[in-house]
Length: 476
Image (cartoon, rainbow, N blue to C red; front, side):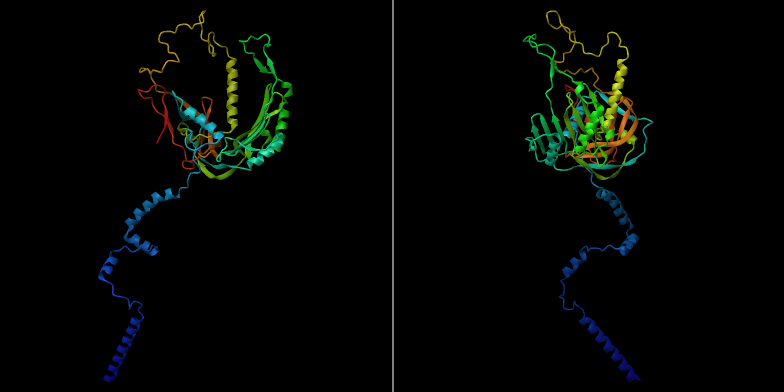
């Protein structure tokens, strides 16, 4: 029994040795060279790349919760900035700097610039009245896209208006803002292929003139005064003009609504205006037609764009829009009907004022400067300042602007026309804010960040040593 047991132990040892031998022979690194101790030491000092997984995350929560909390705060700060979409466009700078604008945008920009640099001795502060709500909303943004080919459009217009000739590129045209035209005697066709693709037809007639005095009676030192002779009998009636306008609009291939056509007529001519539509959406642009004293069409202008939707965006409330008026950067141009309503109100107020009796000795007319019998002007009063004298600042005079409080009584949501810094046309949601002084301001209602605004402009206070009015500068 002892011999048998010893044999079993020897057999087990042989099998274990054989197993170890097989494992050793299967080791792929058995023939690898022995590494120097410096390599091993350097490897221990390295920073191995850690794999991120659910198991590691669970372990990190248990042993490194503070580190994860710091990481979460960092992500909360950086992710919104990375994920925030870029602005749709940059609003054109009213100061005229930067990119070149289209001809239509330049006109709006010049008007804005003249108002900004005006030495404003009156400062308006706007307040929201009880009729202005705090309700927010949502609105579409559209971008204008040119439609068609400018030369094809000119050729089509030449057939419509009976103008012969081939389109030529204008001398002032450039690659960024090309323009083309056709000229035949008094007739002129033109198109500007930028912005809204505006085109126009004009045909100026030679009117008959009625002179106030005969040439034989006029002395050499007198200029003969002549005025056009009105011929109201040649001008069609308003209903006839509307029929003609509808026919021209249809042949021009324009989208329009007949009930939106407004006709103005008097003894000197007539004209029609209507909103320019694209896909039945009012673009904020206008189409015009004009007839002269002889009843002939003298002018027709419109555009060649379509409105492309760029998305729906949240809008601020009318109360928040009131606070944007003073910034001067949120301006958008409202549809023409708002200006028409103001003009109508002003005309009504003027008629009311003219019917009131005028106090004796008071007149709004500028009185001519009286002269002495010898033809010389009378001596001025002591201390009087002539407009030709150099400006001298009076240290005792208060140059602080007068503060006028305005209350916005109501707000009407509408779409506003805006030009971007590259001369492109956009249509954005906004408000027309009517104040208690009888006029309005039109303000973009998009939330901050949807569009990029130009830098604000402020009126700097007059310096003590400055001669003349205050100047306006850009804020860095």
